[in-house]
Length: 106
Image (cartoon, rainbow, N blue to C red; front, side):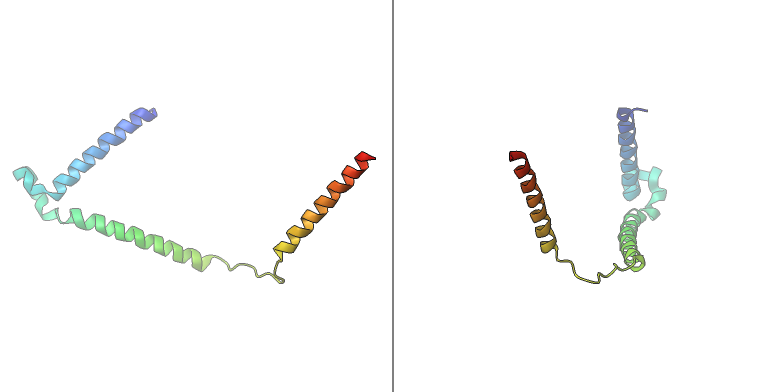
């Protein structure tokens, strides 16, 4: 199945689910054919709300689990002085370049 066909299938299925949800939410608008859905129509609101709340709570649970099970970072014995490390590296590279240039000029 190519992407275009899959896209059309997704569109048609989505429209069918939207229509079914509308009938489930408002069964009284469709007369006797959907009268049996009237006692279940409140679940058309409750179920999505419950699912949304549970998804948010699951994300919070996952964050807590990750924080609880992740080992703490390893402490450093001596703090790093990054400024001096970068300064030393630049001076060495400049002095290396200078030596190479002088040798070529002689």
